[in-house]
Image 1 (cartoon, rainbow, N blue to C red):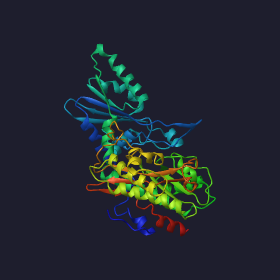
Image 2: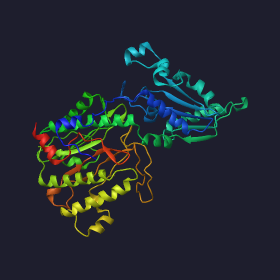
Image 3: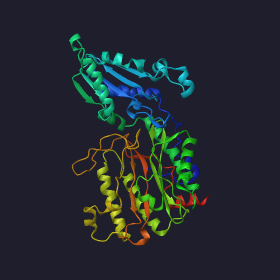
Image 4: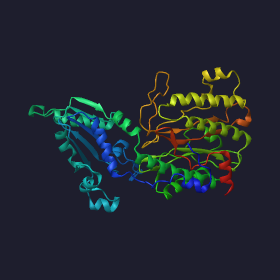
Length: 462
């Protein structure tokens, strides 16, 4: 893969060789529904609920986040809806959306609703009814179907499905016939979501571009005495400035030893001289997530020890990424990366002993304590089978259209008295978002600087 030399202009234009996409075309959701219905047998029905609004306190709600499976199939971003997919005995299909009705008074206070007419016109479903009609109509849709699909992982919705099935069974004496086979829709959707379309890839590329700008901003505005939450504010500002209204997950802004807390989100401490700042933050754009981590010196200059650990992690990340292509798997990447990091810690004097035994004993897990990567898409830790065997190896072969993170790290907490004091308190993680292409990979995270020279140069400019 051709590398792009670092400079502000090349970084900010590196991913803009195609038109910027900030929403999936609504027609793509038609294709998603069609792909799922192609997996349904004749004479079956599938049910997918939207998310509900969640109360934060008293009469205020959290920012609404749609159920990702429902969103994948509809692009519809209102709560309390229900998607019904039907396939008759001849194989013809139909989609029905139940959603909240138009309500002028509600819309004055809370905002506009799509309503039933525009649900059909704009979102491509065949029919749309108000949510109040669900109980009346769903028994008819279930009646006579041989199989029903829904997500088994949503336990509260499963209870509702059984209630509807019970309603159908209560009319058996009048000739009703309830589905006899229940099928989990989650694995089917997971497989579909795992392979991204060109438009999904373009959207994720743009989410990464925005996230890269935010990481640049954090580096350029970092200084000793600033608080972690102030850096977080810089990141969120940059996200919103470019149309990504929400982060894909709670941002980790971890100075010094806080970097050794993997999911540190307090973001409340002051940044200190001669410490590193680890930022794990990604934008969400039209439902799709970016997930980037960078680690840089608060004062703009790495110490020798920080340089040594940082360069080791960076080289391990690049080693793993450069090996990505169709047919590769996480298990093989882990073997490569773990051996490389083990050798690196031996070279630094942090590990002592026979290299082969250190590798076979998985000694590296003392300091590289999480996985090498994960699927990425509508969810940060996205759905999709890893084909994990009895040895906990992830054997799923990579395919074109998959997107994943690669994120090695080394974490040496202040409390680790087994190492020389000069290493203690150093925590480094570097994380890129990678798409599998026909012959190799594409790194979506190229506009977020990561070499020691590029980071120090960028921070020196401020």
